[in-house]
Image (cartoon, rainbow, N blue to C red):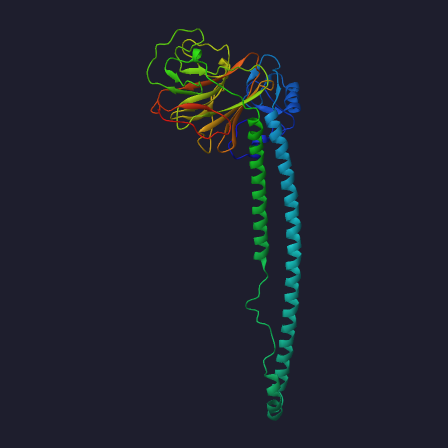
Length: 381
């Protein structure tokens, strides 16, 4: 599931039942469905295939519960319930306002009808007097010609704008409430991930000779020149990659990477057994789960084929969260407090943080593994 700071209802909808996910699961192609929906679909289909991308499987594929999506869907249902309740309250308020306006309008109509009746009566009296003799007319005229006490109706109107204004204010308040709840949902998601922060350092034995590591093994930059380093079976000899020294075979883990203004990189996790020699394709099929920024191509993730992402802002500090048992790798824009993307996988061996830096016009800029919560440490060399 990909997401940018704006959480839409389509992102938490199952494409089979067209409702918000219930117990969402992921299948190997990366798409998500309600567990009962996908199992029911396969029972009635001659092939085991994905309903969305139509990828077929030789046998029924394994499915994994998507806990991140499940939490988002459950909280989205809560937001939807709040919205429904607010809409019901809004209807009640509008109906009451309508009744008040109708009562006022009816009162104004009755008052106006009384004045019209009075004017008609006076007009009839004047016509009767006009038909009498002149002396009687002159005697009655002073009383009849006195202007009646009538209301000035030129400024009177039924205040429908009051109702419209009330609706506008209520809708704005509802939108603000929903936005606040969604922001809290995303904030809580990142905050929960940060509780599993770990200390990640770089493994110099894996570093490509074009890469220079800091003494504390927490910073790396593309040197722009080849270094004569000892040959090592773990070293990447062609692709400019370095792995983290730490590896994970269980549990939940989180770390943050400052990418700054670099415009060509990959970060994520890789299987410990990935090939180190020769040309390498960074994709899930080769054991890499990564977020990338490709110069001139924008952001993408290492699915097969690669999936382009549309992000509202350019993340300069990226949070990486791994849940080994659930097979999840999630990326976050730390400053914007937004979820970027989550991979669903099945890990069967040790995985390690990995970093891939291209040589480009910002080759001297450093990528930094930062303690969670610490401000920017990026320096220009």
